[in-house]
Structures are given as C-alpha cells and as structure tokens.
Length: 262
Image 1 (spheres, rainbow, N blue to C red):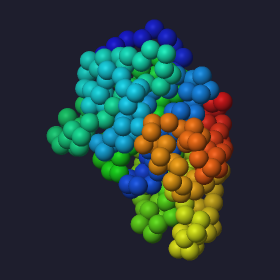
Image 2 (cartoon, rainbow, N blue to C red; image 1 turned 60 degrees about the vertical axis):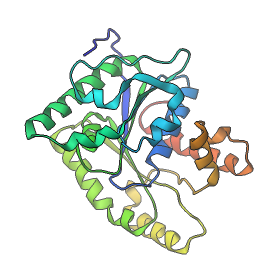
Image 3 (cartoon, one colour; image 1 turned 90 degrees about the horizontal axis):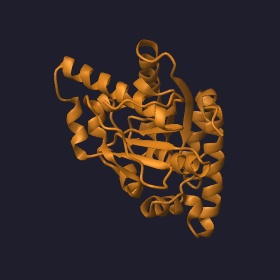
Image 4 (cartoon, rainbow, N blue to C red; image 1 turned 180 degrees about the horizontal axis):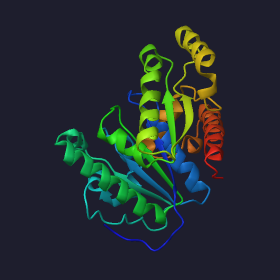
C-alpha cells in the first residue's frame, strides 16, 4: 500500500442508503463538482456495481478500481492532469465482495480502511457513493466516514426503510466508527405535483424533522441530463436547470458547512 508524506487529511463523506433510486449518485456527484469549483481536491470512490457515478465522472478516471481498495498493496490514485476530481471507479465485480469466509470479509474491511486513510492525505474531500445494498460495501463506507448523508425519496418503501438505515448507521458508529457524524436525510427526486409524495413528505417532516437536512432536491429532467453529460446541473443551458442548480448549490452549501468545509 502506498505511503504518502502529506499529513492534512481529507474529510470523508459517505452518501448511503440501502434502497436504490433515491438520488445517492446525484448528490455525491454534484458534491464532487461543487467542491472542485471551490478549489478543493476531491477523491470520488464509487462502490456501486451499477457504476452510475463512474460513468458520469468518466473523464476523471484514475488508475485505481474500487476493488483494489479491498486488498493490500493498492496503488496511489493518479489524478488526471489539471483536474481537481479523481475517480476511483467501480466495476460489476464488486458484487463478489460479500462472498467469502468471515476472516476474508474482515480482511477486506481492514484493507479498505487502511487504503482510504492513506489516500486521505492527498485530498481535501473524499466522497463515497454506495449502492443499494446493506452488505460489505456499505459497511466499509460507514467504517471510514467522518460524515454520513442519506438521501430519501417520498415513496412508501423508502420511507418505511428509514428506521432500518438509521439503525445500521447507529450500530456501525457505536461498534466500529465512533467519530462518524450523521448529517441527516436529504429528500430527493421530490415530485411536487404528486399528491402521495406530498402526503409522505408531510409525514416525514412530522416524524423525523430533526433528522432532515436543510433543503429539498425536486425532481427535474435537467438533473438527469447533467448526469448523462458528465457536468453539474448548473452548467446545463436550460431554463429548468437554473432552479435545479440553485437548489443543488443551496443544499450542498448547507451540507458542507456542517462538515466545516467552505
């Protein structure tokens, strides 16, 4: 495993939710763009075998695949010249990580922790995007995270899963990572014209108001366009993108302020 000389360590944000389609990649990718625009060096680690974050950030791809983080002797990521974002990219083979003996699983967790901690000396922010699974990949992200953000959508199964996700975060914090701070839940892909979603949102605000971050990400087509084009939504030349960009910047500003990052 590479050894680095720099001692200032990045703050690590894990964007987690064991449900799929809740906006994790949207939030994490835009977090990377936002911090790069601030002049901060960002390491983006994609632990989702679906690789959506890796596809959006393909031009920032480094020499390191996420699978290598779970083994000894992981090389140092090489940043693309002139770029402030460095991508450690996902592969479909990440689904194999949960297969193995208890000792093998523990070795993978140990290696991931050591590798990420070593790399933290070369960046200002590390953002970890996780997949829709409660397995090793999610546990490893929580193991190293300084901060955790959980996007949620206003759909029945997502809202019903809030308790399970919070329980897992609490268990990992109590048993494995006492420094971890839960930033809160981020309402995402919110359809303001959908009666059922509005009703669920009112319920979530009533039952979990203390756990919500400031701001909401409304469902907008310009966000999907931005992800497809590999750019932040505020760079899309559409009328709808202006509002989406303002929402995104406001939400991210609040989140990073809680992390002590400008």
